[in-house]
Image 1 (cartoon, rainbow over the protein chains, first blue to last red):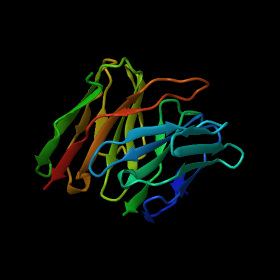
Image 2: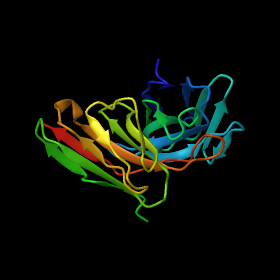
Image 3: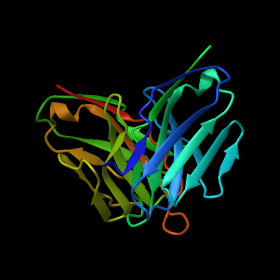
Image 4: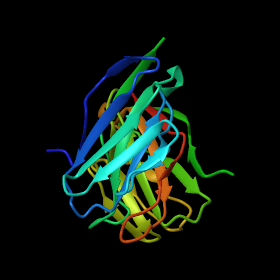
Length: 111
Length: 116
């Protein structure tokens, strides 16, 4: 079983749709959680950190459930520019400095 | 604002050749990592370092060596290139955060390596 597993996707949605991505992790000692966005052939860039209390940044909401070892990302009112691959990242715990990435979920938003 | 700088951006090697991918960061980050990303797949950790003089293996370390003589630099050496090492390589750096976690990672722009 992979340390970090994401919805395989791809997700193809119309503009304006709401879409949710899920991610589970196996290392209960993990301390930090992030969602990254990766555009085609580019480096990953931080989208948002994920906190136990949940956090929101505009149309994006991230949630963490430590008991279930589950992370989610919700995108509301999808835009064409949201088309990208979204990577779930888990860090820290017993191996400080080590980051583990999910395989990513590809989102395509269509007009 | 350089951030993380990787060189070269593109490289073609012949099977059996060796080379070093360079990575430098100017943010005084303690943690640095190397990943490879194959088409349609996620990032796989090759090696990482939690500070100068300290390195450890990741998920796919075979065929690669690293060293961390300074905080700023973390070169990745391919000992004898093989076609299976054709990939995009990303270097990243970050800092320790609170309670054993760490802060966001900043990535270099990647090195696209082809081994023929």
